[in-house]
Length: 160
Image (tube, rainbow, N blue to C red):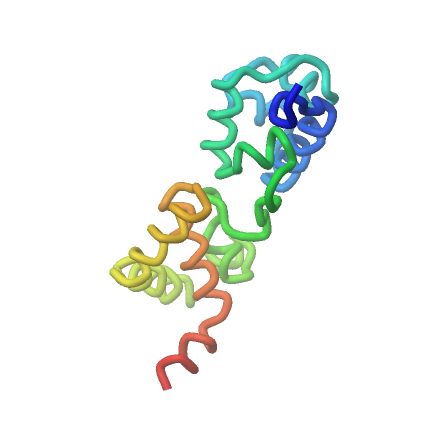
């Protein structure tokens, strides 16, 4: 049996649990996202049963996870501190959603996001990051926009 054939179901389960926790999903919601029953998903998390190649592919694609990391623990774990497609502008700016909606600066924040998204250089960088990390381009673009919103002073220093 080669290294690639030998994988530990309980370790995969632990990585699934990590993904789910970092995405702030319940087991039921995670199962729904993957199109499987709650019973099947909960068994996967505790290392009972196996995953089809289709399910592995769907999970990796949906959450931008490297298949080798998920199945074999090879390579670096995903950086879950970065933005996902579902991360809101409120999280990027450090505000709660309620505060953002009530804040007079919300229009300025939305305008800043639009300007960043229209930047072709940022889009090209997002495409390179997406290819290198094997994640969707939209996710890479969201990561870059969030980083620029969190650290606007870095951008100002580059332009000086």
